[in-house]
Image (tube, rainbow over all chains, first blue to last red; front, side, top):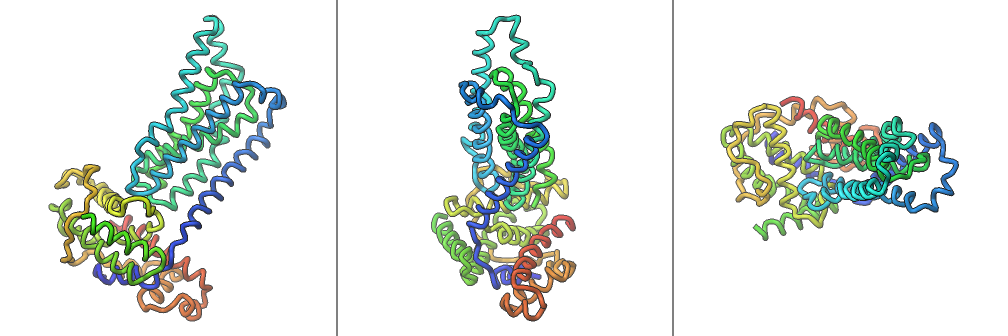
Length: 213
Length: 181
């Protein structure tokens, strides 16, 4: 088949492209991922009983804001990575910014903490399980984002996989906050970020294997 | 180059709305630009150029929904072709044959090169290896020029199954090219 024949084949009977169908698919997939993550958290771990009381504390909202910022800035960057020829530009650094700001806050908190209590502040009560549980709760969102990416055409597969994992980690952590009793910024800065880095690393490894087109 | 960008972009946007004649012109003009782009970068693998032009055109078609009208068409098309080029070089693990470095800034279209060489890979043969529910819709609609409704009547498939068959079949064709090379 020569190239003119191929062009003729591709153009004959070509259907209009429905841009809204793409947006719909993304919305449905991400919503389904979030719902599954919430079901996983509620069914397996249960919602924190003192949640209503915690919601009055600024530290609670700082934690929510951090997770939300990771998820949304990651998704903005991911949208560009999914489109060939779009530069990530400022969206790359922006998706790392929430973690950088959180670390500054955590450092400030630790400096005001008595030296002998610093370790206890970082470790909290759930340091041993927190990161793994965040990675677990993130999994449905990560699967959804990979499914979405496979409908698009990322050209930097490892990076696209890593950012998908990072954004999924942010979304999963946001869901996990409804179970998690820890509010101290130094705890969040270590164990939450680690929990988001696990899916990010998985994404970097899986990207070149799952996202080729 | 600006005029070429605007013209191609206008043609593609009409093609995305279902204008087959505009889309055909778009693909033909783009093919000439891609051929020049790839020939320059595959100076030491000239036999691969036409295969890669075809692979890139198939990718442009399969991924045409990823074109955002707000972005330059040239950057988009070159990114698709460069991805396929790197994929080819990686498959052959012969990146040292690169003539030009694949710098990020080469997003300008090269002057068109209309002289198609013979493709070595025959897409018609690959097409024959697709499952029937994908091959038949492509043969009827894309090669014989039947409508989706006529194809549905002839094959006994539903109209949406015909559309899905074409869509998946062309993606499967791209996957077969990847694994056959």
